[in-house]
Amino acid sequence: MDLHRAIVREIPFLRRFARGLTRDRSNADDLVQDCVERALTRLHLFDRTRNLRVWLYTILRNIHINNLRRQTNRGVHVVLDEVPEFHLTEEATQHSNLVVGEILKALDSLPLAQREVILLITVEQVSYTEAAEVLDVPIGTVMSRLSRGRNRLRELLGELEKPGLREVK
Image (cartoon, one colour):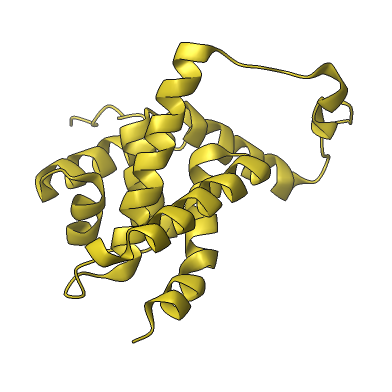
């Protein structure tokens, strides 16, 4: 297997995962570029018995976490001339766009640990074992984070049924 070509085939999956983590197309593309660059320069470290996609997800996640730490220490830099266009436009009126927006907003409000698990399991469709490997946590932790994250999303989206009173005769 030619690893260079295999890495190129994984780029769409990396972009989707990065977009889910960063919520910004430009930052996601930068993250994927950094991930691919790091993978190519450290290709000699890749264990061919491992799943390539899982290895790349791990690299991407680690770079993302490092970027978050750096950003936290440095603060947010905003150039006024580069205000995102969505701040200058009206809200979408289509119901589906509103629903997607609500879901993304709810997903963004989750703790990073829960958001990562939900993205890996539901969007990227990796197995619990692979997600545990990417996140470097036990599989039980993956399952509990996924459960808590899904429950929190239901709460945020108002989909949890309120427990009703039982009728006693």
